[in-house]
Image 1 (spheres, helix red, strand yellow):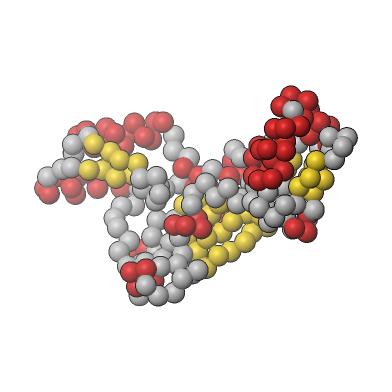
Image 2 (cartoon, rainbow, N blue to C red; image 1 turned 180 degrees about the vertical axis):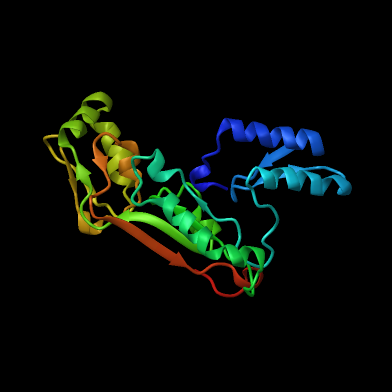
Length: 225
């Protein structure tokens, strides 16, 4: 799929027209892999459908025991939590592993996925062998004026119930003046506080990636994360 799933509506309509002509018209969008699956046709009509999709600029087929369909989140294109250029990373990987997709040379399946932060919207950690997650090394950026607005709008009880205790490392505390204190060395960048207080908290400026390598070789019995 294109990086970040950036299909145009015109292109999707062209795909639908091709499959209405050569197949059943039934199309499935696979959420975990990003694949578009054209389901249901006769054997003699498969090649003609392939030819039209090829003319649109698409490659088709299955990876088998090789590099699988890689994915990136929408990331830097639309998301303020993005910590790196996920789509460029995905495109670079695909361009450099294309031969392994067409001519599988690996002993087992291999998948790359790229998420811009620890929210991991494409399930890179759980559903890939080479997971890349965006993160940062410096302190969370805090706008204390916006923190005070959250307290004013939702109350101290909401802060104490929904924000402070849900930090997995107890790195947050609410001061008497309604400001938020963060023990940044204890922060594990889980994104919870940023998700619930988006206007007040943001990822730091020293951004980069965490790479997790492991996976599910030999039918999930073998090398693990």
